[in-house]
Amino acid sequence: MRNLSPRARRALALGLLLLLVLALGAIAWLPLRWIDRQDRRLAALDHEIAALRERIGEREQLLAEQRLLESALTDQALFVRAATPALAGAELQGLVAALVREQGGELASTQVLEPTEAPPFLEIGLRVQLVIGLESLVGLLHAIETSRPLLLVRALDLRAREPAAEAGAPLLETVVELVGLARRG
Image (cartoon, rainbow, N blue to C red):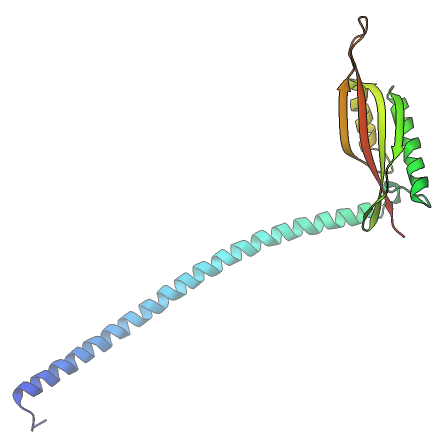
């Protein structure tokens, strides 16, 4: 340093001072940067925890529904029990005919539909044409909904008949497509 001119010494001292200031600035800035990055990571983890808690609630609900379905599937009364799909269709025809008579309807026709695969079940379909009053139809649909074996209404078509002059409420020409479930195997 003795060989350096005063100007060079001053430049060197300023350079060292600048280097010291930059080092001190970096020492102060790096922890702040690290804290900011940790805050952002913590916020992301909080968001992920909230999403996981929501999924846990959904999972618990799905598990409860699964247990309910599994217990329902053990109830043999829910399913059509017949050796063949044709016999199952005949059983459903008899059940629906009885329900229509109980509600005061007039059965025009029934048709067993082609069985459909719905693993692990076989869907036995039935198309029923009947003439029935509106209040009786409501009773019939309730009876179908609560029947055993379980019947599902797939389609419902209603057309009002012209009321007779002395008659009260019009009768409805109704087509109902129903499905019963049979276990496979």
